[in-house]
Length: 261
Figure 1 (cartoon, one colour):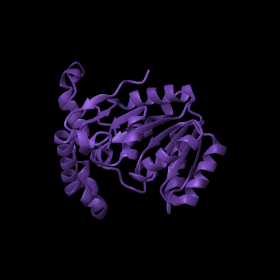
Figure 2 (cartoon, one colour; figure 1 turned 30 degrees about the horizontal axis):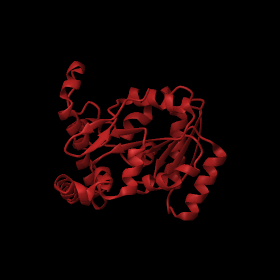
Figure 3 (spheres, helix red, strand yellow; figure 1 turned 90 degrees about the horizontal axis):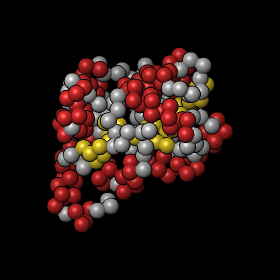
Figure 4 (cartoon, one colour; figure 1 turned 135 degrees about the vertical axis):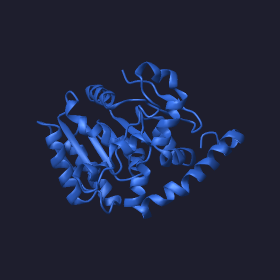
C-alpha cells in the first residue's frame, strides 16, 4: 500500500513523506501492479508551477507519489508534522528525498528487470546507463539522450519505450519539460513507473558533481548549485520565491479566482 500524501502548510500542496527504503518498497509495489504510475518531487520551483500552470497541477494531482524534494518544502512539512517525527527521534528534514537519495538504492527493488534512462547528453546518458547496470545487477538498463529535445525526438522516445517495455523509466529533462512530456504523453506510453528526476542522470553519470549530502540535510544544497551553475539557478533562488509568495497570497485572499488554477 502506498502511503497517503500529507499537507505541506503555507505552500498549499500535498506530498508523500518517504525515506529511501520507503521509495524502494513503493517502487516494488507499483512495478508488481504493472500499471502506469508516476513519481514526482516537490521543490519551490515545482510548487510555483503547481500554482501557476493548470496542466502542471493536474499531473501532480494524479501522481501516485510526490516526494519532499526541496529543503524548504521538506522543512515546512516537518514543522507541521513534528508530532509524527517525535517517535522517530528525527528533525524536520527527516523526509527530505531528492532523486540521488533513492536512485543508488534501486538494486533493492524486488522484481526490477528493465530500466529506461531518458535525458541528458549522449555521453552522460551512456555513463549513467553503465552505472545503473552496476547498481541493479542482472537488470537490463538502456537509454536515450534528451539533448536537443523536440517533437521528433519525443516521438522517437515514445516509440522506443513502446518497443522496449521497461518497468521503470528515469526521465531527466529538467523541470518543467519532463513533467509536461509526461502530462501530454502518459496515455500513449507503455505501463511503467515514470520518475521525473531532473539533473540526476548527469549526477549518476558523474558529469555533474553532487552536493555533499550534509549540505542537503542543512537545507543549503541551493548554495552549492548557485556556485556551480549561477546562470541556471540565480532566478530560482533570488526571484522565484517572491513570485511564489505572490501566488500564495493571491490564492489565500482570492480563492474564487484561483480555484482550479
